[in-house]
Length: 205
Image (cartoon, rainbow, N blue to C red; front, side, top):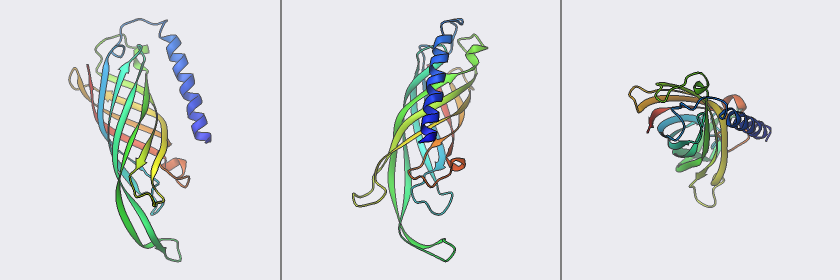
């Protein structure tokens, strides 16, 4: 809860400061009134099983953002992860899993995201190949397991991080994002493991 409140305060502060500053800088922009589409892959600690430590879930995702100002774009994202859920576990004297029944389920993800672009404060151009931004996301995941399963239903996720993209061509490029927040469905995963690295392609028009 403390992490969530902290991220909300940061999000509000960034939004209002950049919104106000938008009226004081030049109007040349490669963000405003443009669409940006991203497709990518990420890995993060799902927290679904709790064991063994460091169980990661791959996630394929896509997002669409629209530039509302020279510095801010916002939109939605969708994703998909296959997750392994451990049941009927037995442990040894060291607390390590010796046997378990493992079931694989689909875990779609969905939510809203806001990207605050930093370089437009320094670069006035409508066609710039590099981009650096602060990204904020809030949404959820849904585990499609049977009704009697402990791990089932909607779980919230949120995070804040940095993003860097490079447009190899005028409209097509690559990007990388690194963020931290809440990317698992239990409280057992420490903050240092509550992080996500995303890689993919970006397209603007």
